[in-house]
Image 1: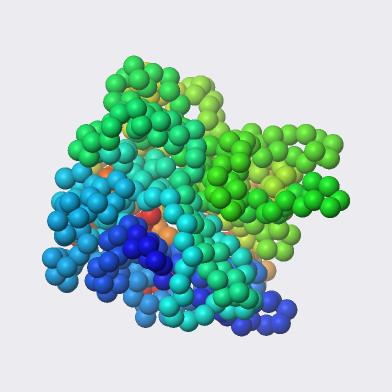
Image 2: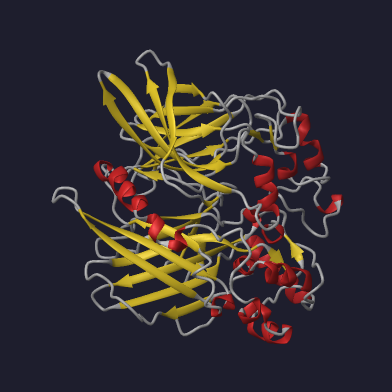
Length: 533
């Protein structure tokens, strides 16, 4: 790229499969913000925000593709998170070790002094600095785009986790930031655009920033509240009965164009997703917001009109055979007498709601990710609980953010022995047909999982085995979720050698016809560790 503020490496692996299965492209996208990439030492030290995408997936090939890819991953050095060891390069050569006035003149939101010192200790922390809007035509310096690779990849992530010197309370509270990578193998062109999602909270903060001159080392008041972040200057009266606002910062979904008339066809529809709100429609070209938060609903032609009864979680699943979309949303009910529930949803390929069903949960907790197998929709229920009933009082009164009341209540956290409630973890397995809960499998030990990689059904001598691959928090039992959340609360301040990682693990479950089930085996799949994020 011409700009020194964005650097990207794109590995394209075209995998030839059988004729009936089609072709799969594996894209490994490597982005770093902002100008810190001017230091050549980043690649040897495995710095990077890496995303791997399979453009086309079929059930017969998913696990095979992943096995092939992970078997070679150790030879691709930057697939792993930065080393926790001291950087081997000379610190005086890096972007962040230039004079402060040089750094400040290069960045639109230079870090305050205390954050700059933290970045200088570990240069990868510069990747958490605020991004800025940009539009770039890429200059292909090596390799070529395959002729039959044409399309746009959209990535969503927190673009900033601080406003001025004011740190947000959690990485997940960061303002959503979209990056689109458009590839055209025919014209040999690649374009990359980056832009903050113009949510109501983002625009309100920008207006507030304009009212007061930005001062690098001053903490400005916030115009919004997040799940872990208090509004204003954090005073209770500024947060009294204040609901967290949707940052739209986690994922995207593409939906087919809608036919407006016989001769007018819209472009494909793009939405920014976050489990803390409804989808927000985005213009795929300009990345402007077309429509604010709106829940998905049934087709106007449907005889039964219904609207999604919950938020639309960030990580949906799409069946590669029917193209139907599956997702879930947590049912927020502050009543102390309510039973915890989750809302399961099934959508048409166009995004119209076909069916939804609420299912009881053993306790109040968020489900961040789920996946599908050939016949099932499944997710893990983990004892990182959400406050409910009287436990919500400090949040309602503005004394603490909603996330301040979340607790790990499985096995005791390390250094916090004797304070765990011993809640169990479960695997919930629902029918993709009617969304009913067919199996609830108790795990022998608590698990801490943010993301599920894949699930696959196998018949073994009249038995049904379900294999589930997850990115599981890597630590000696018990899973130290409390420490992980502290890491997310301040990504700049994680001490060297103490950043938590995840391991790729596979669980094999036996699902019996009578509705019972149990865990048969678990094992590590790939050597090494990856980002817990």
